[in-house]
Length: 327
Figure (cartoon, rainbow, N blue to C red):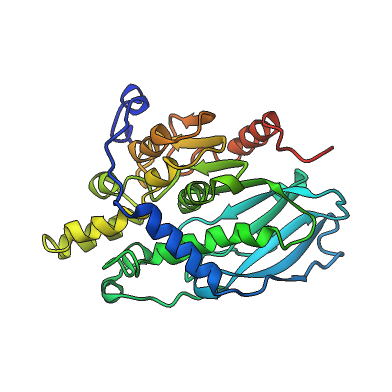
């Protein structure tokens, strides 16, 4: 596999013009206000078997998301922790859900609380009810409801992700002033969306090889992965749906959210990534509004990035910014 799309020097300067819809902020204010107006209760049930996980407590959480519909999450904490803990809110990659609690033990091992948010329709515990004319043509989630911003799948999923932060204030033992939003691929794009939609609620954002960035570029150059769903959709519906499709996607482009995010940010990129090409990641990074932004570059990596080595980078970076648990 060769270096993807641009050389490193070009990527450092890559800051494309990406126009936001005139009503972008009003659209999202309305969306979140409507979701919150639906109400709904946050519920948590302890599920840990002490004999299986002796150092971690796990709660099965349900919180109201889009349209007040219950969204599943796992809450993991070090057993017996007393002080309010910094919490890492984790969003999941494309086609995945929250999985099992044993899939997510790293952050609690480091002393953090972790809220692992299910992805509606992609996981097994949070259904999605498709809407809009575009749904009948959808190969996957990328084009579900893409006929309009109101109907698009990611409107529902991104709303769920913001509402997870609303749930934190109702869950005991969590420090709502030290919330880190994180994820890889789709999860990284969702973390950027939340950082841009709720900048006053986020203490740091950690997007690894983020998806959902610079759709117009991604549809042209991606060689693998979910962006190809979009490319195939446009191929079969060209030219009459091309501009209307991108007009919808402009409301969900992580570049727009990055422009509105101010928390310290730790990105990562793989320079041989055919799924989330480096230029799409740098488009979000170079537009990021916060002054404290860092890019971890894996020059010979594909979409796996730095794998386990990236964890140490993240833990050290969070500690340097005063977001480590008390020892």
